[in-house]
Length: 111
Length: 109
Image (tube, rainbow over all chains, first blue to last red; front, side, top):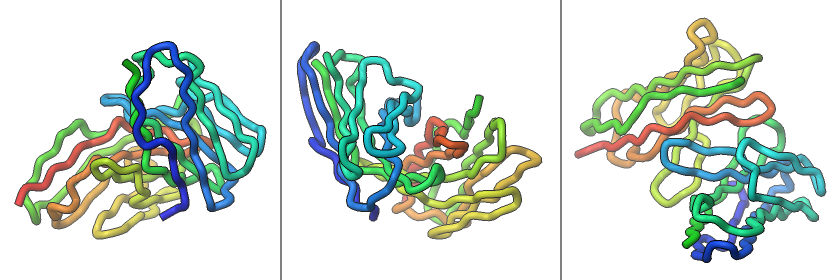
């Protein structure tokens, strides 16, 4: 398995609070991604990074920000969580723009 | 834009049955194609891939052939097992991965 960990694995938070999810890799891959998974939608890309401090938006980026200050860490922040952001969040890594390797996921519930 | 359409689920089969999960795509270039599998409570795992037309990807008894003429990448397995129960995602890659919505497969003994 690719060396990808996500923390926390589960989180319950209240509407309006900030939340930060962490993705950590030990593979030294260049690209890192954040997805959300919702029933009927498959996986949708939130943000991605193509290098340290280089990030770009995906298809569902509103309400989310990211940061990558080190190759191994990619943080996803919900500045003010809303119930529509209740989801399972997956981090992924890749060395090229081809296949990606996924972390175990974080289940976030916003009440 | 790019998109992936895959067979609606859920699919329920008996053990040792033949499996086909259909996947078709629309792309503006020449993508690589993938099947990912997700077991309950886990992340997605790469099952197989094909990078050009007529390539066949295979792994763990699963196969899929990249058909450019029909823009398809159907997943097949000759004899499924209970342990194959999972959600299967078809995806294409052209700079970014685009996923289908997933097909839930349940195999009953």
